[in-house]
Amino acid sequence: MNNLFFLNVLDKLNEGIIILNKDLEICMWNGYLESFTGKIKEEVIGKKIYDVSPLLKNNMYIDIFKNALKNGESRFCSGVLHKAFIPSKNKDINKELRQSMQVNIIEYNKNIYILIQIMNVTSQYERVKKLKSYIKKLDYTKKELEESEKRYKILFEKVKQFAYYDSLTGLPNRKLFMETLNRTILEKNKFSVIFLDMDKFKNINDTYGHDIGDKFLIQVSKRLKNVITKDDMVARLGGDEFVILQLNIDSKLDCVKVAQKITKVLDKPINVGNITLYTSASIGVAIYPDDGQDKNILLKNADTAMYKAKELEKNKFKFFNNSMYKSISYKTKIENDIRRALKNNEFEIYYQPQIDIFTKKIVGLEALLRWNNPFLGIIFPDDFISVAEESGLIIPIGEWTIKNCCMQMKKWIDKGYFLNSVAINVSAIQLEQSNFEMIIKNALKKTGVPPYLLEIEITERKVMKRLEESISLLKRLKKMGIKIALDDFGTGCSSLSYLKKLPINTLKLDKSFMDKISKGSNEEAILDGVILLAHKMKIDVVIEGVESEEQFDIIKNKKCDKVQGYLFGKPVPAYEIEEKLSRKSIKNDNTM
Ligand code: C2E
Ligand code: CA
Ligand code: CA
Image (cartoon, rainbow, N blue to C red):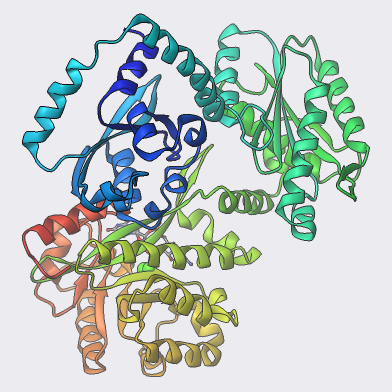
């Protein structure tokens, strides 16, 4: 059975069928929906599902789809779905109709799709009846099938188009480029990867707006297309980054020639409406097999060479060589990468449970940042937070974290989980920003998350530097109901007297305590003292970094309030921690 036949069958079913890709774009919209909603395929294919059914925005359905993608789980929902889902063109039907929806995950050509089945039925019994009726209907004339096959061929091309091509410029996208690169490597011939980044594109966007920026990129891509031969490929990786796959090269000279051509075509000003834009590109080249034999390494090395070329004044063009890694200041490279990561949404928040020491139930979460780097995999905060702090990039990162964490909390609240508190780590540099309070307030207001669910963790060492300024801000936050935790207590110049000055609710004892603790040790005595004192000051104590049963044995009878550590759970993505929360809420456990 070929794909077109399969699509034909789906098209003829007596119920609604929608197929979405990972970006929730519609790849398939069957005949039933056309007649039911009045929206035809040509109108909806390629659009986001929530743009076709705007009520779906901010709705639990998006969650259902995303969870389905993440966990591969099927879902069945029933109810008066049509309100959010597929309104009929016939208003009377809308009043009475109940729809049920089955969400399934299908895999095709190694890609994952969501298949949504929509049935206008009220009972399981009717579902079965419907099933029988549409099996009967599969009896089509040859002409009918040929006609819809023709239509599907055109649509298939369109689906391919938006899975593999950049919607703005029409150039191949990252995905198609990487797949082609992979195939090219298998042929084992010499070729080059030419990485291009437009200089000062951000200025154009900031000065003239995204509309002009988009038109500028379209013109750039046209020029680049003219530079390459028909065997080569130019793709847009995203933003202002392009990449060329140059085949059949004999020597580096062939790459130099292309780079010179690129420089020349981009040297001519670009006119968008009556605006004249001057541009240039920084170009980096990596050659197979010398500079890498893996697609990711080749692209990364070409990117590194490009980055090095950016430092040049003129003729911004460089071949990759290994010494670049040493000479490029690591910090500037990370800074550049962080900027890109923010643009491409590469950050993700993981959550680590905080456990009640007696009941062993989850009584809080700590939000910990992860960077899903497309080249290097997951990067942990210790490897980028300090650079982000030094460069000031911690401000946009921090803002992103606060917003997204609140959005996630709101989702959990809406789903009925009983949240206790979610702690976000905040850098001292964020506290020094005059708009920090506004950022928090806005995030809470926009999501409707009550302030008492939010805890912010500050680090003793850093806050101490600007103690007075920080104290008044922290006091205002605390007054709003937000909880304040003092993190990593015991690492810096810990002084218990600070506890009196800082308006804190929680003290987090650093992991180094746990590392050194043994029965009867000094650490145990200090621990006892700190807990006693903190409680006298009405401050809760959290012990961090509990990794083993032995450690837990020592602390389990201490009156600390919460424990956190690998023994109880590592930081995991939101959907994974949610499973732990949901199991608890099913048991009607109200602790979380
Ligand atoms: P932290 O606030 O002290 O967070 C606890 C760190 O210890 C986390 O590392 C966590 O994964 C790790 N951890 C927890 N339990 C155990 C355990 O039992 N054993 C061991 N060996 N480690 C454990 P992570 O996620 O790598 O974070 C490192 C630091 O990065 C954090 O230390 C925090 O200071 C900073 N950070 C993380 N996310 C953010 C953020 O969104 N903003 C800011 N400004 N800093 C962040
Ligand atoms: Ca922390
Ligand atoms: Ca800590």
